[in-house]
Length: 167
Ligand code: PNS
Image 1 (cartoon, rainbow, N blue to C red):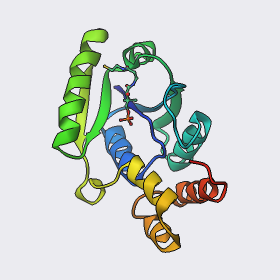
Image 2 (cartoon, rainbow, N blue to C red):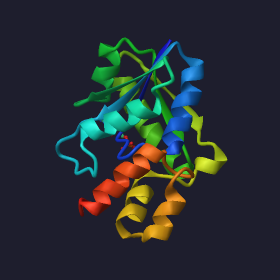
Image 3 (cartoon, rainbow, N blue to C red):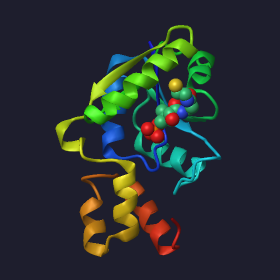
Image 4 (cartoon, protein in one colour):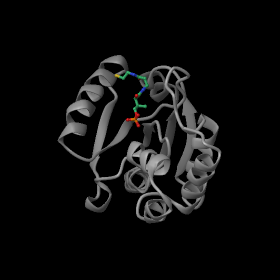
């Protein structure tokens, strides 16, 4: 079975990594698919996001990292995937994700979405919270973010963005 795990991953968090590793246990192949949307402003370029994800999964043979643009339903069909994988942190996620899941199923040849609940110790993490702490936090807050929220490589990349004043 091939699963596609799509997202913006701006940047990848430990919550994303947890969902991908758990999803990979259910599949023969898992493609982490980074959305390349030129109309959406992101802190990291698509190449930077792909690079951080590749680093995170460098020891997991079943997991591939790629990018896509346009409709997810097209990408899933193109890659002959059996299902889409998404994580759910809370009821808000469920509301929006169930709507996406129904639409994606209608847009494709009936591809379903498999939801995995976020592990409790990652359920509070989001890329937007990580970006906000990076941009407005001081050294102490940033240090607290390393390991509990992101990998050391992502942490270093965030510090580099901050030092360059990129946002
Ligand atoms: O990490 P995110 O930002 O929550 O991921 C959202 C994502 C990339 C899964 C979603 O925006 C998406 O699939 N975009 C591609 C465009 C698309 O297919 N839209 C119609 C969905 S029914």
